[in-house]
Image 1 (cartoon, helix red, strand yellow):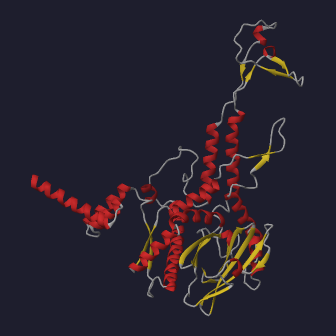
Image 2 (tube, helix red, strand yellow):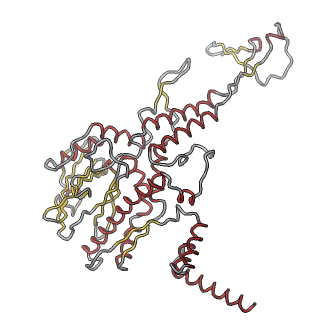
Image 3 (cartoon, rainbow, N blue to C red):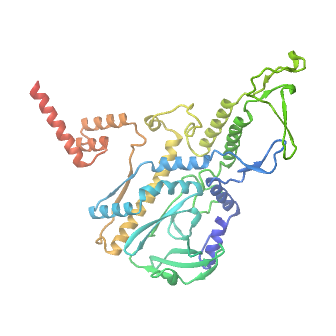
Length: 469
């Protein structure tokens, strides 16, 4: 799929300096996308048994999805704190992010980005409204870079209308120091790329070439996992967080499939003597079937050696539950080691030791280090997106021209135990390094007005205690 994306972009923009498709990188990227979607190459296996024919779908653990969701939660577990030094810019940014469901869409965006090696958030204006587009690496190709910062790229968008498939390619670049956008639209009825179509006929008001003299910075921001791309060093985008753990994911699915089938193969089996087996004849087909009547409660006389032939034996196999759980947990620890997480971060059962958030924060764990590396990249993505939103606000007249000063911070509430948070605020207030108002706002997670009301109630209670004493 990634190789076909490059080919389609080359067809749309023959003169663009696109990267040559690397067979190894494209193969691993496509494989990671299939694994994330739950369709790995090993998802079907041959049926076993005397009458087993054909293929059956393996019972899978879908650890790739769990891993990407966990990495996304560690990176963007709580809302980032966005600080704009201009109040009008702050209000405008909050309204745009809320209008585009930014906080709801970002966890899923990060999960997909971890799966396919990255993604981009694009800002654009439509009918006076500023919109955000969340694109993963499967529909975005970075092109130009400036000292490691991606400044140009091609986006692909797909949609269907009246049974026709439309594919829009948008190339974002720079000419004479400002942003320019070139667009090419294709239409098809058979699922292929099809032929080029006039954009203005399909999307009124959208032209094939646009220039934005007021914009001197890219209108999109990129994110890629902190893990180094060892498959192709000249790629601007990263690799999947489990690109080097495919064999472990396959072993996990095999172990889980064996664990699931253990309950099928280990069903209760009773060996009964042949003299206790009855036969019944199907009147239509004449086929003779043998069965053992488990509900038969009458006395019957059978001609046989009673001590030897009438012995009923329970031949049920013992379920190997603990062995499978230990094997799966061992493989999960191996997956954590390969993806930069601490052992026990992913566990198949509650048997692993559970640490509090304060313990994780206090220890120099691999999970904490990996989380901080990826959070720095996520903060850069959010900061660039916010800056672009403000520039679009100035361009559309929603904001007056001015300086843009933005700061992004991540709250520590998800990695700090509440008792530790309270003790830290008490020590800072006693040392004179933090105001009581700020401490109440952080501990109680409330607004300034609510914190002032709470402090006023505390003063009233203290006055009443002094009167009683």
